[in-house]
Amino acid sequence: MLYIHKYHILFWLFGMSRRAIDEGVIKGVASAEGVDVDFVRRGVEGGRIVVFGNVRRRGLKLVAIGEGLSTKVNVNIGTSGTVVDIDMEVEKARVAVEYGSDTIMNLSTGGDLDEVRKRLIDASKPLPFGTVPTYQAWIEGVARYGLSIPSDFFISVVEKQLRDGVDFMTIHAGISKELAEKALKSNRLMPIVSRGGSMLAVWMLENNSENPYIKHWDYLLELFREYNAVISLGDALRPGTIFDAHDELQIAELVNNARLARDAISKGVQVMIEGPGHMTLDKVVVDIKLMKSLSGGVPYYVLGPLVTDAAAGYDHIASAIGAAIASAAGADLICYLTPSEHLGLPNPEQVKEGLIAAKIAAHAGDLVKLGSRAGRVDAEMSMARAVLDWEKQIKLSPDPKKALAIRTQFEGNLKSCTMCGQYCVFLLLDKWLKNRGGISVESLLKRLERGGAYELV
Image 1 (cartoon, rainbow, N blue to C red):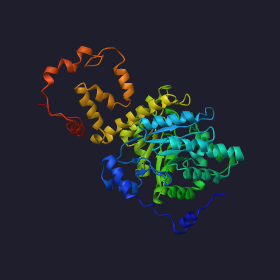
Image 2: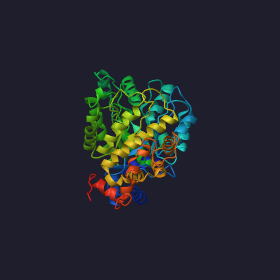
Image 3: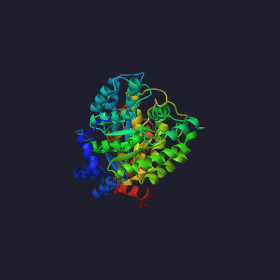
Image 4: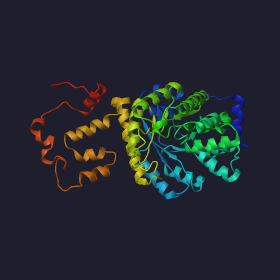
């Protein structure tokens, strides 16, 4: 049976009321994002902005996701059932923090899952930390009960992870028993590619029972509200190939998740919705607009999307292409992919490559979505290039060590780079460019707001 706190009894007696919004947090988000305080407050109250921060955690970086804010990037790490190297996962967390991830999720399925989670929470500081509790519930539940796992066991695992300080969790509540049955009888090439979704589908069919997260939905909301954690409604029926994108199953689950999200918001719980895996370029904007319309603007957390199925070894690039379009169209959180996606567990270097690709994609989208609010680094980089300021260019690059290594890979102490050498345009035109003025970072940002137009003089 589920453990019932005294707080829970009071909660049932007096009903759900929205958790008070900390004014300092609201002001902090507004300052960090360069937006109005009232805009943030209305976004949080309306469920269009979420701010991470389990009440059990201290010293957490202030990260907000949602409407009108910069696009954030998430890094997945974690052991597998075949590779259990906690030290390597700790190193991945370190890399994710160093190279600018906004959040980290633990997808571990191997080893002592409680120990792994606690070590990775510590290694991920100060970033918000997420999990997929279905994994632990399934793995430990099958070991203890076989396939007859009690439905409330799934919820007890959620509660345990919340007590450990997890800030957000993927909850696969949108896949019903009916949808699971339809998926397995469908002509989909890949009926279910979500690991958590497949675990729940097997459980529902074996036990002839509804999704435990749906069955215990009100209690689940109570827990998340108590800990001030964010529900990330999982996309168990996301397309695992471009040939399955935007079929009846994906859309039906999205409709379910939108309904559940609105219910959570009405009861004072922060929530976001997870989005598709694979779809062609032309479907990406449609997907973002559809989700936002159905949910009323709930933050959208997308995996890519990957815009081709044929990029093994380079899926971080296929994903970044889709992520840039998704970000520009209104996606709020991008889940990175690494070069090892579909091939194996990533190593720390592949985590870095995947993260940097996703951050570039998110930023490219923000240049469209946010304009000059996102363009300062581009303006500073362009100014540095125009005067051949290599030190600043390297400093502003996503990976300064890599940029410096490329800059110095061939001998020669040139003012230009070794690509153009003495024929660099800025050297050829130097005599006529010396006395130019009137161009600054601020003037470039104004050009960006005007769509790039400038005046001839």
